[in-house]
Picture 1 (cartoon, one colour):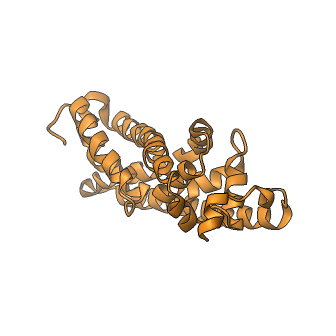
Picture 2: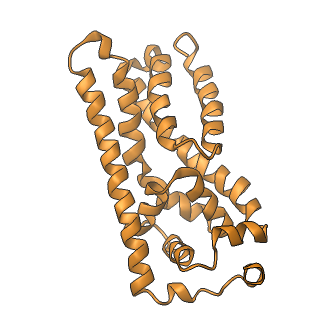
Picture 3: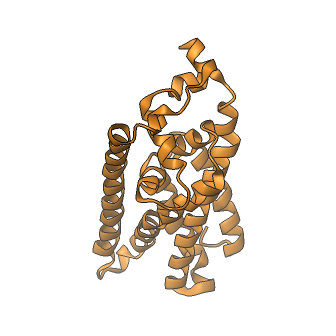
Length: 217
């Protein structure tokens, strides 16, 4: 994309990145990394190197929010109309009830952020749709995803400068380590908060079972 106008490059990457997000096996980190690798050189003439890095990081962040809406509304809510899918997901299980309880809390809480930002991208967003959760509240809880999008996209941008020598390689590796550490911490918090709700919040598990799912279980 280096030889393409940055607006055209942004549009192309948005389309390709959105398709990547909609594929279940593709992790969000791959999209953020590609944003740094592909968008930064395309935007460098317009914004300078540091400006291009910032643009790529912001673009990756916005794409994640857009992907959440598409995955939740277009995929999750449609799947939520299927009793078989809801039964397969286990909407009546204590695990899913605990997740529903956490995600239903308004605004930003650490527990909510740990699930939305620390959980696997496609399954988490689609589960929000299956459970019929408010997409606006999910977007609010997803805002801290910048802690992953920024270091990952910067890692991709910095790797482009490695042939020049200097400290670009350790900088790129440091960004990847930061992203990995954030992902690890969020994953551990996710497990902690789910188990805490299951053991300390009996009201969460009293959510009424889905009667249609009960009949097929």
